[in-house]
Amino acid sequence: MDVTASTDVLVLGGGLAGLTVALQLRQQHPDLAITVVERRAHPLREAAHKVGESTVEIGAHYLADVLGLRDHLDEAQIRKFGFRFFFSDGRSDIDRCTELGVSQLLPTPSWQIDRGRFENFLGERARAAGIEFLDGAVVRALDMGEDGARHAISVEHAGTTRRFDARWVVDASGRAGLLKRRFGLARENAHNANAVWWRVDGTVDPNEWSDDPAWLARCTPPDRWRSTNHMCGPGYWFWLIPLASGAHSLGIVCDADMHPLETMNTHAKAMDWLRLHQPRVAASLERDQHALQDFLFLRHFSYDCTQVFSVDRWAITGEAGLFLDPFYSPGSDFIAIANTYICDLIAKDRAGESFAAYAEIYQQMYFSFYANTLTLYQDQYPLFGDAQVMPVKVIWDYTYYWSLLAPLFFAGRLTDMATIGRLRPVFSRASALNMAMQPLLRAWGECNLREDAPPPSRLLDQARIDWFHALNGALGQSPALDADAFVNTLDANVERMRVLAAEILARARDSHADIGSDDLAALVEGAGGPVLLAPHWYGEPVAEHA
Image (cartoon, one colour):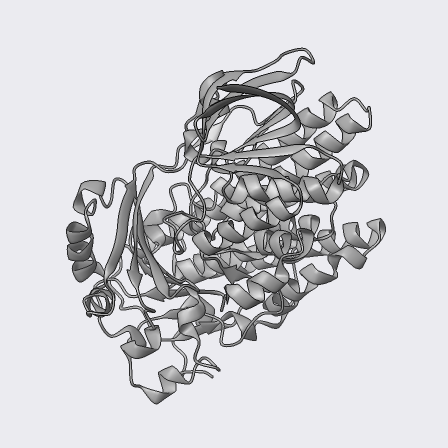
């Protein structure tokens, strides 16, 4: 039995990306006909086996404030206690390793997301908002229109083939990449990394790894378990993310050359790998209460796409287009950014405006955000175990993120072309600084490999860096700034980046005089200001601090 239906927007994929773009469209256009088709049947089981359980500031703000889902996040998910890093390769004495994290919550919230629970909630919310949500549906054919013609999409659902006549098609199909395959848009990048991940019953609490009162007292309250905990070593990191359903998400992410996937592509192999690289974590996971729920691996998970927005009224969001790396949890950020651009293009089309130029500009900006963020990962995994350099890199990377892209999104100025035009030289200066900083950090780590000094035991507390704490808090104040104040704020942020870059360069050359960084030196010439990071951030031996 065949049925033909008409819709304004057909969303292919009803996961996080697809349901959120549908809800955002519904907020902006109460009369818009929106249909979402999702392959998996709802309700999903909780702790669904999906990547993207940890949110950071842009994605968290999008979910909580743009979409208005804060009540659900506060009541049904877990407020995240920031990122936390332990430089603990091969060690069981976690309380004697360098720890990087916060001792108290920073002002701008983020959450750990149980994807099964969350996507069930989003599906119910979509249906309540009048969005047609077809779960257990399979896309069978894509007849994409050109030059203003409508699209014809065949979907099999509940024993019926439904042929949708759609003005817009949004691909949110995840790694299936329906439109990317249809148009041959796949593009590789130069980041060769693999991942394996699994879920276990129960909560894995790092506080159980030590009975040292001083170590336990570093965090008040002692909520290390609520962090996205990273166990770091050369060429890899291991994540621990708690889920509100009572499960814990675990994963190994690694440089493909340094840690071949074949050494960890089964649960038994992954546990053997952990016993070697993170023995304290392995011992915790061998307890009876942490029964295995599932296991999956991905080879070469990072990829690119040649086009995401089209004048022919189709668009791609989420992993259906591109994906960077789970480190720093940028997945929901890029969903938020893509969805915002897509909604603006559809709004312009509905208003009868020509949107072709905007589709090109938004795509250029989206790809620029992707390329600049990729530099944080590409060829950087070898230094992930460096307890001196990696904490400095984390501070730099956060500063870059909170100084520019995050405030741009929080202020609602992602599509404000007048302000974007004024900010172009500011973004160019910041990008140049970052492009010069990442090779310096990599070279510093390579120089450290020639030495055999044991890493110090210390807590590096991000919450105690006053300007860093304030930079995070300022994100929530961005919407209140007029255009002039906003531009001036971001300009000041980039100047602080320049001061920080000068300080990092000087510290690196104090450690290794032969580190060459002429490009960075030229960019920071004349930079002056207060010392931004205390000596212990650069690995200088100091007494244990509060």
